Image 1 (cartoon, rainbow, N blue to C red):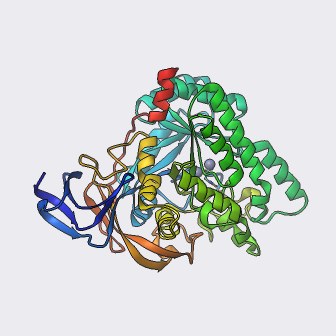
Image 2 (image 1 turned 90 degrees about the horizontal axis):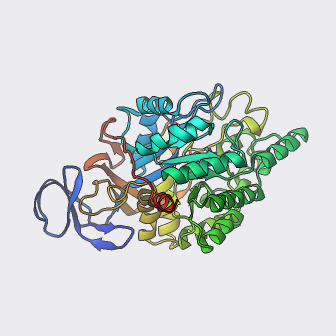
Image 3 (image 1 turned 90 degrees about the vertical axis):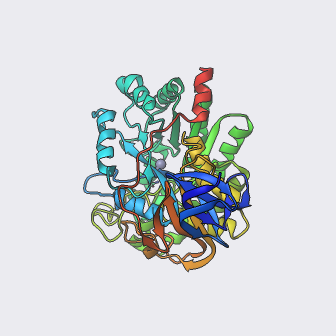
Length: 475
Ligand code: URP
Ligand code: ZN
Ligand code: ZN
C-alpha cells in the first residue's frame, strides 16, 4: 500500500522476532499500515538510516503502586513508572493487582484502574495476584475476571501473608485450567526461608546482605520443582517468574524436555548483579535486596544460556521500586533492624532493554531477533496481546522503538526518569540506546525528552494465553 501516511519511518532496519529487513514503515491511525520502500508521503518522515526499528518493549512483570506493608510506599506511581518505561523503549507494561484479603477482587481491580486512569505514558494491562483462594474467589471471582480480559494471575510460594500452601496452589491451578488462565508462580520455599531467617537473626547476621543467605539457590530449586510437579498433576501450563540460577533453570529445562508446558522468565538483575556486590556495603546493600536474590557468575551464565536456548521465553524487569534514602522505602526503621524487613524489589523498567541489548546483542550472546522475541513478541504471545502488540506487521499497533546501536553511555539514574532515587545498574557501560519511542503512532520520547503527554497510555484487556487455551480445550 502506498499513499499518504501520518508518519513514515524511513531507511532503518526493521527487526522482528523472525528477521531483519531494510525497509520503511508507514503509519496511519496509530497502526502499521505499510512496510516497503517508496511508500509515498507523510505528515512526518523520521530518518532512521543506520538505526534499528524494533517493536516497543513489553514488560510483563512490573509492580506499580502496590501496597507493600505498613509505612512502606512504592517509589513509582503509574505516571512515573510508565514514563521510565517509555524512556527505556518499552511501550506496554503489565503491572499486578494485589488481592487484599477479605476485599472483593473486582473492587481492587477497579481501584487500580482509578490509579492508572489518565496517568500512563504507555499502554498497560493487569495481572492479578491471588493471596486468598477462597471458594468465592476460585469459583466466581476469578472466572468472571478472566472472562473480562484479566487472563493471568500470580501466586507466591513465599512471603508472609502471600504464600499459598500446596493444597491452595493445586486449587488455583485447577481453577486456571478450568477457565483458561495462565498462572505465574514465584518459586521460593516459605518454610525454608523462615527457618534460615530466624537462624541468621539469632546469630546476629541481620545486614541486608544476609537476605541472600536466607534464601539460597536450593530453596528456589526445590520450589521450582514442586511447582512443576503441581502443574504436571493438574495438567496445566505455568509461567515460572524471575528465575535466578542454574539449579532452577535446569529444573525447568528438564520439565520442558519431558514435554511439559512450563514457561519461564528471567530478569536483568540475574544477568549483571551478584550476591557479592553487597559485600562491604552495610545498609546500602538494601538497594539490591530482591527475591530471589542475585546469585553468582555461574548463575549469570546459566541465565544467558536459558535466554539463548529458549528455556526462558520472556525477559522482564520485575520492576518493584523503593527509594533508598527514604523511611517509606529501603531505610524504613524496621528494615534497619534486619534484612527481613527491607522491602523486596528494585527498579528496572527503564533499564531492562538497554541491559539486554548491550550485554546480549552487542556482546554477541543474542541475535537482534532473539532480543525482540525475548523483550516484546513472546510477551505478547504468552499473555494474549499478539499480534496487536509485540511485532511490526501491517495491522499491528505502531508501538515502535528506534534504537541507535552505536550510542554509548555510562548508565546513571538520570537516564531512567523513574520515581526512585537510585538504579542498581549505576555505572554500567551501555552500547545501544532507544532514541525514539512511539506508542500507537504517537511519539512519546525523542532524543532524551518526554514529548508525549500522560494519559495517552490506554488499558488493554487481553485474550487468553494460547498455552492456557490449549489446556482448557483438553480439560
Ligand atoms: O523482590 C521482588 N522480586 N519483589 C517483587 C515482588 C515479587 O516477588 O515479584
Ligand atoms: Zn515474585
Ligand atoms: Zn515481581
